[in-house]
Length: 145
Image (cartoon, rainbow, N blue to C red; front, side):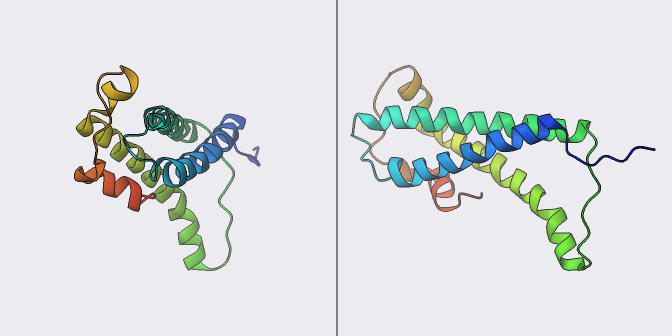
C-alpha cells in the first residue's frame, strides 16, 4: 500500500500560477485601475488586461478544482485542535468560492455595462460611472466575494 506524500505536480503548478495572478489582479484593479478616470484613454487598455487576467484566473481555478478531484493527495495534517482542523478544511473551499464569485461578479459587471464590446471590439466608451451597476460595488469592496 503506497501512501501519497505530495500533491500532484499539475495541482502544484496551477497553485503557483494562480497565486501571482490573484495578487496582480487585486493590486492592479484597486490601486491602478479604480482611481483612473473612466474618460482616460488608458482605462480601456487597463480594463482589457484586468478582464483577461480575471477570466484566466477563473479558468485556472476551475481546472484546478477538476484536477484536485481527479488526483490523489496526501492525508490532511492534523493539528490536535478541532477548531484549527475545521478552519484548515474550510478555508480552501471558501477561497475557491471567493475566487469564482469574484470573477463571476466581474463578468456580470462587464455584461451589464457593455464593457465586452467597449474593451474588446472598440465600440463605444467606458460609461462615466460604473458604480451605478450593483456588481461594481461587490467587485470592488468585497475582493473576496
